[in-house]
Length: 180
Image 1 (cartoon, rainbow, N blue to C red):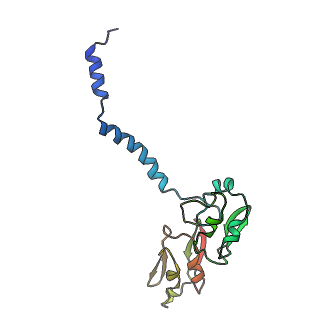
Image 2: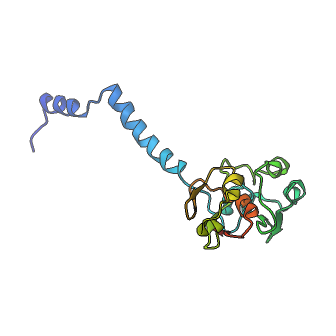
Image 3: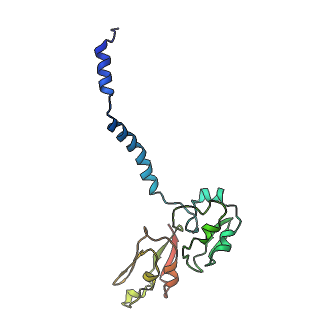
């Protein structure tokens, strides 16, 4: 076996060299990729939850089932079902006031997300389909998720928070709530 001389080690050092800029660029690209991917993750929900609730797996561990969120809700749409806060969107819409989050003694309602886990969908009963003028649902939507078309409405699922204010405003019950 042949001994490695000074030229070999010098060549290896030159190959392994990296500028400071290259080092930080490499480190930052490894760090920023997971951050970008995690920013688009939406909390998974099995039922409509208060808008700032953490995802269900964490909610089970954090919620102490005290019912403070139920008592604090001015719309009276939060109930404890299976020990977890759930929205009854058939009765009323969530105005996203944040009272439930302020009343929660744990961090169960401290998420940065504002989605209830539900989304609005339009049925075939919209009176705009027959040429009638109506913009009640669009005017009631606080997120601008409803676009009026000549023959109905279009609901943008990405901007819809699932608050059900559009469903409450619709006089023909043409909007229904479903889970994402």
